[in-house]
Length: 65
View 1: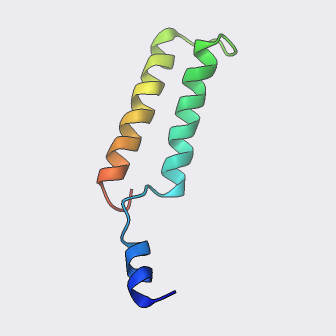
View 2: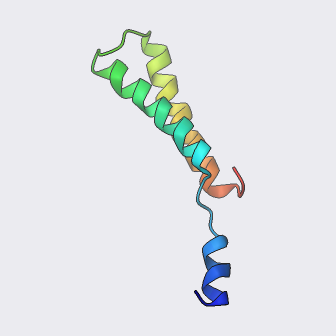
């Protein structure tokens, strides 16, 4: 791979893998609660969706998150 492409590949705003996993876990909780596959309060289901999406949005803007 040419040097310029290597630098461009490293210069990304993509979140780290652990951030993706945390967001995915929060989204899964929200979806499973929505379809009544797990029984949690509606507040927890709603907030897990909100926090998961907000974390993903912030992670795209903040490098190294």
